[in-house]
Image 1 (cartoon, rainbow, N blue to C red):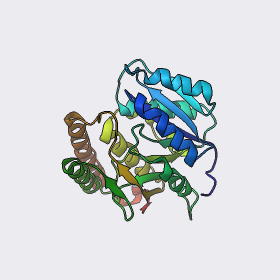
Image 2: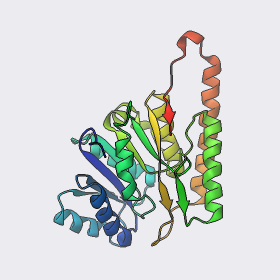
Image 3: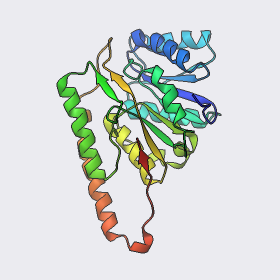
Length: 260
């Protein structure tokens, strides 16, 4: 793996992930020993936050950000991004705590930042060549694939896995995007961030990953999260087409590029 362009911070949001947190951080540091970890805990009643503090006391690479309660995945990541931008880290990673994002795939994602022309945003993709999903129920796969196809068509972006939550940002991307106006959650948060980066002209690259269903604990997915994503993506797609119709040719600007 080529050296990433600066210190790496992996943001891991948690809510009731006590069983999963230790193993995932151990695997992460085996894969990328120099990476720092920020656990963003939403006052987990199962003691995840307390475990994270014990891990931080034993390892200076681990830090903990406590929040007052469960406020959603998007809000947790935004809190982690703000923390990252207040420090020295040049690369910020999104990773789930439940083991569905294999830390062993992270070196390849980081490598895409400096491979060839280099990426600004790297998406761990289940739906490009070499990517796969393991042990997911058929209905979950259908929802995920359908949501990605719909988002790709509605927004007009050549991203095959825009809902995935395993991704790597250059610091500049988060500095330049208007994070204060991001309020979406769940799948919709991931679509929102990738869509903003693409529209801003950043280079987006998809790298294949193996996504595995969690082995311990329960999924946070709900019908409300899916409904929010459908409604917002539809709204963004309609607004985008309306603005393009109204835009004069001389006002047209180039958008970001995507490659697998």
